[in-house]
Every structure is written in structure tokens, then in C-alpha cells.
Image (cartoon, rainbow, N blue to C red):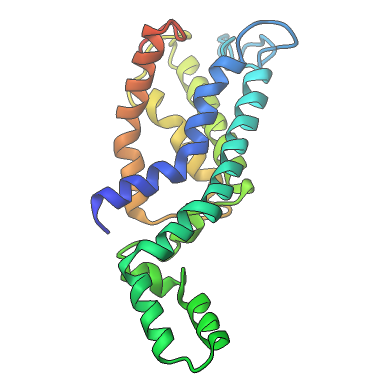
Length: 227
């Protein structure tokens, strides 16, 4: 698979996790009806378990929004992406011609066309992963797993930073940028495992995207730190 399709599929695949991780910061603001996930308690080393930045409202709000993004992906994939791919991809024309020439009735043509379109063979001929249909039109459960997994990964990252003696807001290179991606992938593997090229693309490009988004958020005064 070429690098550009891998990047596009990777970003589409992980979008609920990006949304969940980014919006959790906004949902977690304020103290009204909000509590830290560790209830302000310390671990056995005397340091906070997670810190004040990890709240119930952020966890619930971020997960809910990421799941909503997953639902939008499902609808847009089924209504827009897959129909467009089937009608505009060169292989779609070849499938149409082959089924038309081999069919003596419209019903037979329809059945052949439906069987071939978006089958593993269809995506192989497009030089795309055979499970591209599950990426382009994922389930809502996929969106939930990615969203919740991203925030669980972020919690693990915060726990590790506290154990290293780093306070809230202090940078931890790579851990800050990859903890939520690792958590999202780990939990989403329960339902679906993407191609290795997609996983590699995510691990390579996520730190760049994450840092860029944080710098923009810092400039807009949505974040206190540019990392």
C-alpha cells in the first residue's frame, strides 16, 4: 500500500481517539459537577495518582464526543465514501463490464455486482487493505473503544508521570504524544486490527499532529502549555 492512502486511512481510522483526547480537556474544565478521577488521593509513593487534570466530566464528555464522531463516520462512510469509491474507482468500471458481459438478466448482473463490490478482491485490486470497508464505515462500538481507550491511555500516561515526579503540565516527550494512541489501539483491537502500515503511520505522524494541535491550542489560550 502506498504511503498516502495509508496516512489517509490511518487518520480516518483514529479520528474518534483524536476527538476524544482533544475534547476531554474542554469538557473537564470547571469544578461544577466535576471531580478528579483519583478523588484527590495519593498513591503509595505519596504523590497524586493522576492529578487534578483528569476528571470524571472530561472522561465522560470526551468518550461521548468520540463515540459520536464514530457514528458520523459510520453514516458518512455508508452514504458517501463507499458509494463514491464504487462508482469512481477504475476497478468499479471493470467490475461493471465483467458482470454486464456475463449476465443475461439485470437481476444476475445486480447480484454479481453486489458480490464483487467492496469484497476483499475489490480492495486488493485498488491496492488498499482488504478490510478497508471496516475502516471507511466503522461501527459505533469502534468509535467508543477508540475514544475510551484513548482516555485510558492518557490516564496511564499521567500515572507514569506522577511516578516519575513530574507535575501536571510538565513535558514528557513521546509519552505525552503517544500514550493516548497506544491506549486507543490496544482497546480497539478487541473489535478490529488494522494493517501494520496504518499502525506505523499513526505512531509516526501522531506526535507531529499532537504537538501542532497543542501549539495552536496554546496560542488560542485553550491550553496552558504548548505540548
